[in-house]
Length: 142
Image 1 (cartoon, rainbow, N blue to C red):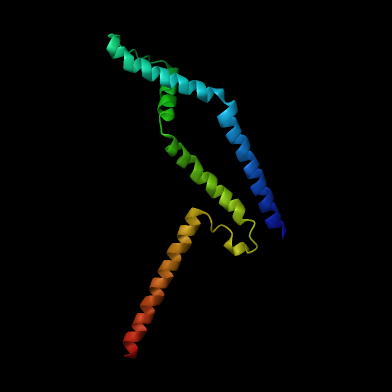
Image 2 (cartoon, rainbow, N blue to C red):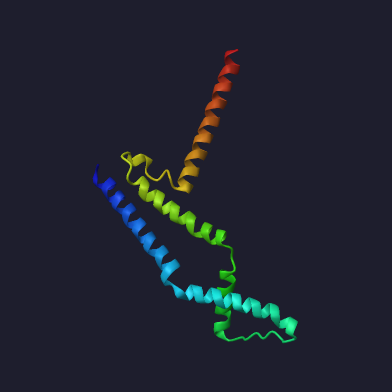
């Protein structure tokens, strides 16, 4: 095991520890997110009940209201969308660190999606050129 592989394993370990700390912070410690979510639910209930009670819905134009409105809109996105937005880059970084642990440095980075797609497209083009050349040779031979 060479230095690059050791540093790759250390990087994977530190990345996983940082991930655990971040998930713990988001789901256990951060009460602001919970408070914003509760405010969003309460505001949605008030907006739905206001027309039933005959009360006008007020909208303020203070600088904090657009930030609050933006936060409310972002919180209304479904969980699967937030999961996709954060999971794809997370996995790409993890797979890059994991590929640093491989013995062959030429295969390092093949787990990353853009590099993987580029390699697959290059192989497909090479295969198409080779099959085209073979079919031309067969036509000439006959």
